Image (cartoon, rainbow, N blue to C red; front, side, top):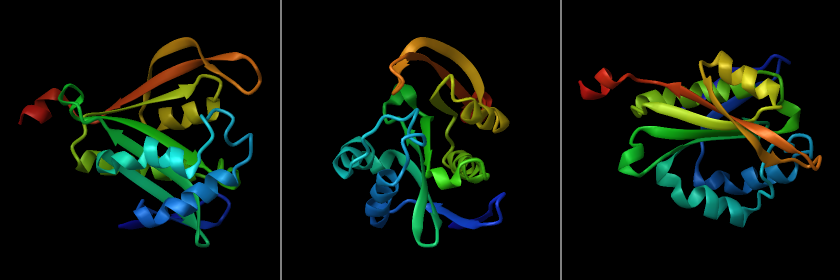
Length: 180
């Protein structure tokens, strides 16, 4: 299933499930991203690193891509923890090409991920975000995520300084719904 998303700047993007055929274009997206767009990320994002880190566990992913003119401009995923003690718990991450920041694409992709997570009966989605990334925090809060804690000096930035990490979560179901 795909969703057409009208962006704030008038462009239209398609958001759909990630497939193995998308791997090269996702690597191309990361290679074309600016240093600023990856400011709070954990590069490098090489094909080998993505294969080992994310795609080798594809059975545990809800993954999406955003396309614009046959080019991938966004990648987002929820990793569904396989350990029984983490049943129903997922971790979210998202990356957008700099040409698609602040136009509503991140919100649209995250809304779609949350919709899919609910269909898969996930209980909770968590994420970590550098506390200085106020735009991302605002978006997550708009989607219902709550700040659950701060880890002091947990991220070493390109600026040569330590930054705090915020941990956020969104509860999708309540315990009584799981037991029903």
